Image (cartoon, one colour):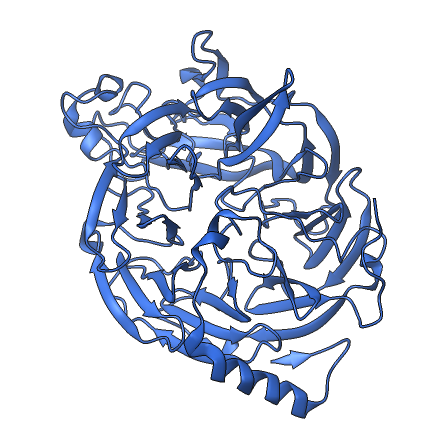
Length: 549
């Protein structure tokens, strides 16, 4: 752990760490905070249930952000290689509750003092399979944490000590399931999903009892024989191996008691000839009853996906006045370049349109449902087919209550997609892209979610990165600020209304997760990760409070 900027005396640092550790046993999350905008905590993966990644804090704002400094850093390079895993990269979102940060890497959970970055305890899980591609974080209920091992075990920990309370296996890693998601706690439900890209799986979302880990209900993404949606598959056998992982956390409306979740791509990934049809409910937004797991409505943003366009992106929820009336809305920017805004009570789309220009895979819109129609001529071919590089990926977007805009990091680019397996019943990937075709361009987009209009765009410079990738996550605040990073190791703060860069910091690695913010001891902090290191940013002492607007 190192400190920069306004550095207190070492004795004060150690005293704060000891005080935090001493008070840790009393660390209990107030359940009411889960449904409130995050202020003095960040108690869920998205900060609250909405997925907006918006903070009402404005002590750090567009008039004083130029003074922002790195206050402390905490590095995790000592983790070492795990079963052949590469150098640690923090992909997960930390939680912050009562002055304690909870941070994850695959197989590892850490508690840190939020004032100093000093470690309080470490929990290590020894997995028996799965993929160590990343972990998105923990969920919290009362004084318990919920963590997913890569081999599909859900582990409940005591938040004060890191000691294990119980464990529950939700899928068999030997059947090619793996897990990377952050559990979501909604009421008395712990919601956990599974991954299995290009694997022979049937995706599902499961609800567990937070006290015992007992299963409450399970929603299968692909339907069984005789169930609604099975008509979009050749047969029940194809659907039972059809994919649809649920590997990113969804959102929740407690008033409607409805969960909103994005589902993954169909399987086989690039070879779709063995699963002709739209392949519900893969690459879709599904609205589920939180008490039963029953499907209330769906919107399929990518019918019959053959380009690995996972639909696990965050369905953000918010309320806006339309025609003088408050409407409960949901906005989703898909990995396939499609933007949809939906009345989340009824499931009726208000807007359904590309946010990325030049989409090759779409040939129209269903006039009845407003769902896009896939162009089968653009499927991967043995001779190659030109298609869009993933316009976005799993990194979270944000919606600002201050500007009313939806922000998303994207890539404009093309690839050649090849079909490798021409058999009637292909398996696994069955094909794939050749890599970038020409130069790709990363673009930060600010979009009006009611009209689809791009209010502003910020193209990132391609310095030595012609095959530019998507990322990282974003966060917006009431200070008219937008926090994110580029692919040149820069952490960047933009003005939310017009995209002007107000502050940046050169880190040793690219930002690798979504930022969080909270108030602690009267100061606003922003915490984010770049590679194997957490950074805590704040203003130096003596900076003026937020100006009135």
